[in-house]
Length: 500
Image (tube, rainbow, N blue to C red; front, side, top):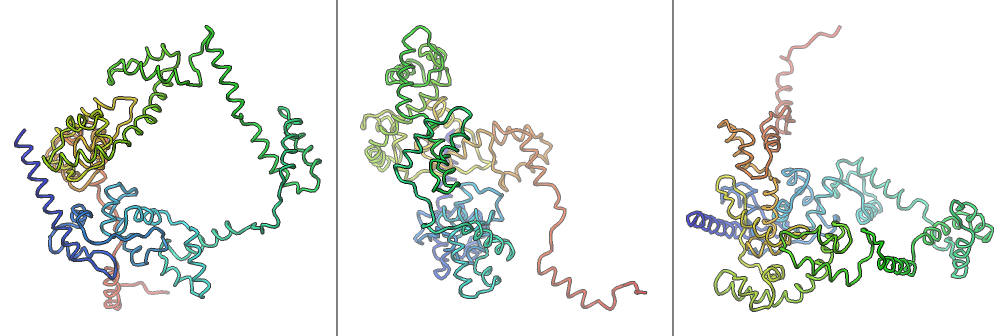
């Protein structure tokens, strides 16, 4: 076990050094004119693949300011074309880690890259984009020139169609504010009275006819719209009616004929529910007994308990966030580790509340899945912590998990997904599958080696998808030029049929 820990420490130390080296070279290769790093020079110096360099890049160590491009019109054509070419390396949906790589490559905030990526896979016309195209139209620019400035859509025809469709949808039927029909408060009160007096079940049409006769000076369409608004408003239960219903339910609950599906929870029921749950071990709560004690369904008791936990615990945790964070920072600075029992004793909260409240995260390690060197000790430790502190119906707080493991929160998400059998099929993982499959290992054995909850069907599908031959690869522009040159050179020698 000590050897495994020592190997992990050495691997993490080497990775930190590589990360610092990549970040330093990226800062040196920063192009201030384009606002991004020239990653080709970094790749040549380190002799590493681009994706590996981007994964090692640490934005917190970089001195380069990150660009903010919140709107699609803020993106230059070259930046957008570069983004479209770069995201083709990823599948249809970007994960959080993929978005971080795109953000590092473009030197743009992660949220802005996600917005631009959504426009790449599903181009759509927006108001700011429409205004920019309209301004280009006012300058008598052709559609070809506009498309070169805004290369969002797949073709010029798509751009034209989206523009005219947005214009027809937005500005068709637009009327000035002076033509709108206004209703006074007296007329609205009279309308409410008509609906209350003349509406009966199934008599919506007769009630509408009375309203039309009552307001002959109003347009018929305006009367119909006003009737629909008031009619649906009258059908909803008012607050006073809800209180009256609640009083009737409470009065009925005092009798012997109680129902098992009561709607309302009073403060006494909530306090009793919390008290009954504390009588049991969090990992083995007898919800059937609690349900019979409260005369409610098991699902209703679980749902209410989950709501109460969300309402009460965050307030208590956020009030002590600064105190807990400062205590954790002091301990980590002294010992390079955190003793949560000491933090709990000094702050006066439980260990789980301290884990949930801590916001200090300097020095947290990264967890990267490697099928060759990965051991399940860390994953089993995280699983034991979750089962002990967040048994159902409690939702898992991954901030507390991250603080307990002292690993980045996104990496804890990945580890939990891997334990559920959600594998990210990277090149290294696929290479490992191909290697084991070449040794004659079965799919179920490969799945068990990669993840305890991974199914053989998923491994088989990923393997077949990775190893199946590519039926057709379109020729590149250089190949097309070579073909044309050879055809022109040997045109007289090519065989052909005489036309008759």
